[in-house]
Each structure stands twice: as structure tokens, then as C-alpha cells.
Length: 419
Image (cartoon, rainbow, N blue to C red; front, side, top):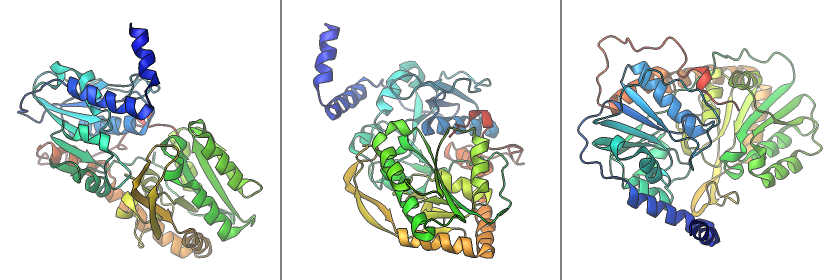
């Protein structure tokens, strides 16, 4: 009987299966009663998964630990949410999850009902439910609204995300930018005459959204085959979208000064790669946070970035090179962010090429940008700021003395994902 049901299920179109699954799990979410306290906090997510969602949950745990707030965790890796491919995360100082408190769910709105079912009635009984959400378009997809109906409040890493959530959610929204850890790496300025541009992206995050072809085209427009300039395009998870990899290889074919680097590196090596570049490009169509731009700014490498979505909140003309754009329908053949009823940005390749030329030709200008960018990033993406905002969201007063002020990076390197 079970096998027959499974065969029938597989015959349904993928989107139909998805909608039915979300509706069914929403009906299965246990009743929880009225929340009565903010603490302790249960962090629920794919803690043992090498994904952005997993990293968000791990940063949340580390922030609670640094703030001296009681917490526990529930790992949802190895389920439909994500693979358990990063074991060993340190959760040694947990308290009991029983009783009142807050559950912070690091999961998309579409899978949030399933996550609550996995957490179980005993864990969520009497708890305040918070979603920590990331989204890359100006409005939430329809299936995330099931999650909206189950939450008391939502935390987001940017104003752009907050604006998207606010269209579907009437409750409190807290903007809590991620703490950015660059492993202590700092840029020392150009050490040779070859100008190096860099872009980094994860194919699993969406080829069209990350838009590496725009970077390649801007570089070729700026420098052609000039051996005195080179572009490194670092990509991970190329197998997630073979069509995208084929397009990237076709665009870079025959260009001796462009290197497509397909290699998973330890995080510190990635930071050193950013530090060795003269410019980092993120000509994305949309970002919910913009980790690459934030990392480059903190390291002191000038950033050329599409002037739309979350990066527009911190890459300004006095600390980076924001690139104009036109809005186009969000068509994504990979289906990561496909919603043609919404728009995303198409960066001006000519403007990006001009920005590259200026950074190459005016080292003094490039250094001024880098110095200012580091100051902006140190304030906005500090672990101190993250701890302060978590305390505010949880209605916990800061200690009279800043005894939670940090003496080590925001997130231990062992918890960060290689790329």
C-alpha cells in the first residue's frame, strides 16, 4: 500500500507535490499556547550542514553564547531540509529546552511548518516562535506565507529582507546583520603590476541571481586580452547547474587572462584570495545580505557591486563602487529564485568596466575607498553589534559593563563553511 501511494505521489508534478506537502505539514503543526517568556532560546536549524542556512544558525548560537544567554539547539540536518555534511559543531554549554522561551528557526518559510513538526509539541509548547529569514527578491514567494502565519516575529539580516517580509507579515521584524569573520586577514595593497579582479559564487545559490557573466563581460570590456590584468572567477558546486557552468566556460573560452577556479578552499584561504585581489565584483541581480561584499570591505579590498537590494545598504560611493542597473523580470531557469511577477537588477556592464579601469589607474582612490570600507564594515558587521541586536530582540538588557565585548572573531573558524 505504501509503495502504491509513493508511486502515485511521484506522478504528480513537482510544484503540486510541494504545495501539498506544505499544506499537509502546516495542518500537522502542534498547538503551543501563549508564550510567556523570551529565555532560554532554542536555535533550530541545519546546524550540521555546510550551507548558508547552517552558517546562519551557527552564528546565532555563537552570538547567544557570547551574550551569556541560555540556549539549546535542535539540529534539522539530514532531513528534507539539508544534508548533514558538517558534523562536530560545538553545542557543549546548552541548557534544557523544556518550558517557556523562544525558538529561533533558521529555515525558509516554505519548510518552516515541517521544521515545527520535527521540533515536536513538547519543545514548542509555550514558546515564542521566531523565524530568521533570508530572501533575495522584493516580495516573499506565496508558499512562505504559510510560515508567516505560524510566527510571532521575524529576524532578517538586512532592510531589503525586512521590506520583503513586511508585505506578508504584520508582526515585529528585527534587522540583525550577520557578524562577518575574515579570519584576521587584511589587505596590504597591490604588490605587483598585474591588476587582479575577483568574483566568487556558489552555483547552488543561483547562477542567474549571482550573475557571473556580467563580471566576465565587464572585465573583457575594460581590459580585453591585456596580460597586465587578470580575472579570477571562483565557483563551488558547479554540478548544481551544468547549464550555467557551460555558459561560464563559453564566455571565458580563449581568454588567457581569465581563470575559472573550481576548488573548495578552507575559509582562511578564501579570505586570503580576497585580500590578494585589487577589486572584488558582485554584479548580482539581487542579494538578501551580500556576504562577499561585506567580507571584501572588512578585508580592505575595493568592491564593485550592483546598487540594488541588500548591498545597496552598505556599498555607497564613499566606500565602494555601486553600479547602476535596470530592473528586469526575475526569470531563473534554475528555479532558485524564479518569479517573473517580481523584478531584479541587471547591472550596467559598461559602468562596471569603467569602475575597473578607475581602480586600476588610480591607486590613491582605490586605497581611500578601501580604508573607508573597512571602517563601515567594522561597525556594521561586528560581533558586538550582533550581540547587542540579539539582546534587544530578546528584550534582555545589556550588562552595566560591556563584559560581553569580544576578544575573538564573531564565529569560530571551525564553524564556518569552506567555499
